[in-house]
Length: 95
Image (tube, rainbow, N blue to C red):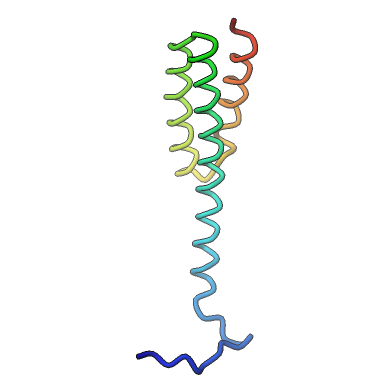
């Protein structure tokens, strides 16, 4: 059984760098997931309420591609902002 009688002091960093990188990756993934969910909700508004299924399908495909490319390239949720803007505009303008 491991001994738990040793406390980490301020001088010992332990694996703090690994914790910080994991936390940064988690926050980045959460930001992209929230932006992608917003795109999905806007696509559902276009498809269900407005009746523009093709526009919503194209918007969903482009949003998923932008999320994947933005995550890999390091842009994060900022890669989805033009898609969110365009889907929101389409939700307002198309009747």
